[in-house]
Image 1 (cartoon, rainbow, N blue to C red):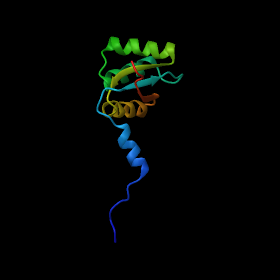
Image 2: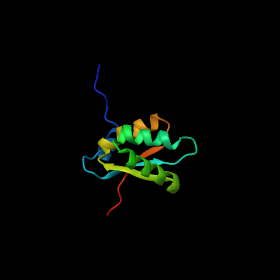
Image 3: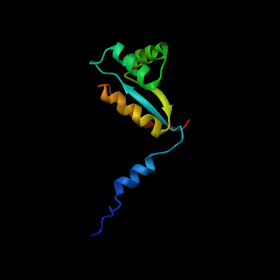
Image 4: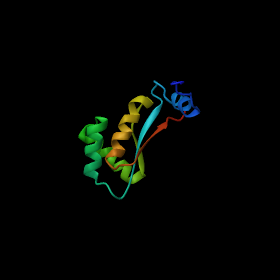
Length: 99
């Protein structure tokens, strides 16, 4: 019996997306459910923001609809994104556009 797992296309694509460079941004999205205090607490706990940074970010998220709260590598930002979404707040990791 062959116990090796066949290589799939999905695995190959996932490996290609992961890069160690600071080429991604963590976006937090506005909603009508979460309070400012909850978003601020989340940014402090998960992203390491100061209270002032978190408050300013929450205000921008509220007024603009979304905000890039952190930049870094996919490997760094993905666990933060997952932790934020586990708290019921919308978040995504996106590639930085060319500067």
